[in-house]
Each structure stands twice: as structure tokens, then as C-alpha cells.
Image (cartoon, rainbow, N blue to C red; front, side, top):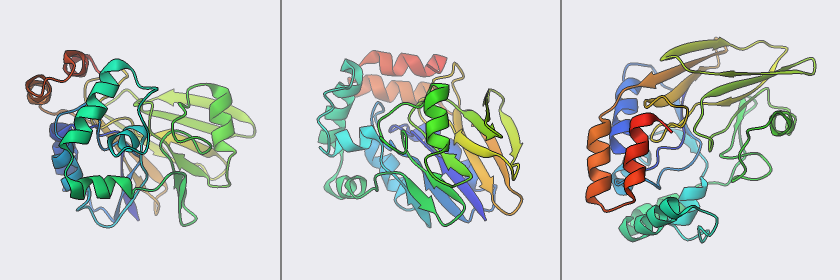
Length: 246
């Protein structure tokens, strides 16, 4: 099976289109989404329209998804994020609000193969950043491979015989071969708002027959995304940050 794994699109239509074009070049058996369809960007309906047509798909919600459909009040968001969340509430169609609202809370298991979540397995809005939280997440269940989003940073964490190591993925292409004696916690990075100083859309493909994970970084039309954010009168910083990938 080949799984096409996406996270943190954040209403960035141009980035999603680039990723979907890539998917046409790969034989995909199932799509996987790790949360945050919306928030920050100016094309929430168009992004939801694309994702809800992907079949088959397993998906979990993100904190911005929750805020957009009033499952949370966004009180813990910064000004720019909250402003975008409230704007998104007004713009989402009734049908698309219904789709976003029915997304599952993670973690969700995919058979005996892997587990997906947005933030962490104990709190969907928690940022896994420290080695302590990584270790806790890896040991939370018996799944060998776990995928998470939320931080927008592509990374491979591995645990073998109680030795934890982490590797940031900075290249446009990187392949990881899964070691049967190692547990993994993997972030595919963000499609629509990268935060590791590389302004490219990021995603992964998990081949469970070969037990290989491929990371891809893709160019997209950043200028068009920025133009739309400014035209929508969202906080200008949300457009500016895309140029720098942070």
C-alpha cells in the first residue's frame, strides 16, 4: 500500500494544487490527512472542496479546523491566527463546515500499520517539540510508526533500544527505510505554511510494502497565495511569512 500523507494545508490553494499534481505521478492507494485544512490562508472552501473528494482517505482534525467550525473559541490563538479563524468561519460554506466538523479527533489507527494525530496522542493541540514529549508520544501505543502534524516542521524521530534520535528533513527529497527494530514518530511538514525556513510545500509517501517513507518538498506559486491573503484583508504578516518559510 502507498499512503500519500499531508498535513497543515491552511487554506493555501496553490500549495495544495502543487501537491495534488505530484500525487498524479505516484500510484496512490490511500490519502492521509493530519489536520488543519483551514486557517491563515484565503481559500478555505477551495481547499476543503479538493480534500473531501479524495478517496479513500483517513483524516483527523486540527486546532484551526476546530476554531473554524466553532468547536473551539480560538482564545489561545495569537492575533493573526484568531483573525483568520473568525474570517474563515464567515467564508466557509454550510456544506464545507459540515465536512470539517465531522473530522475525527486523533489519534486514529490505520489497521496495524501506523497511527495518525494532529498534535499529540494525549492532546490534539499539544506541540511535540522536546525529546521528552517525543519519547512519550512514541511509547503511547504499540504502533511502530506514528505520524503527527501541528509543528509544520518535517522531522524523523526514531527510538531504538531506548536511544532516541531526531533528524530534520531539509532536502527536496529524502528516503527513509524503516528498521523493524525501531519505533518512529514522523512529521511530514506543512503543505501550506512551512516553518523551517524553507518556503516549499512538504509531504510524504509511505510505502508499506517496501517499508519506505519518502519526503518531498515542492515549489508553488507563493506570490499568488500572498496576493489573495492581502486582497482578503487578512493580517499582512500571514502573507509575508510564506516568503521565508517561518
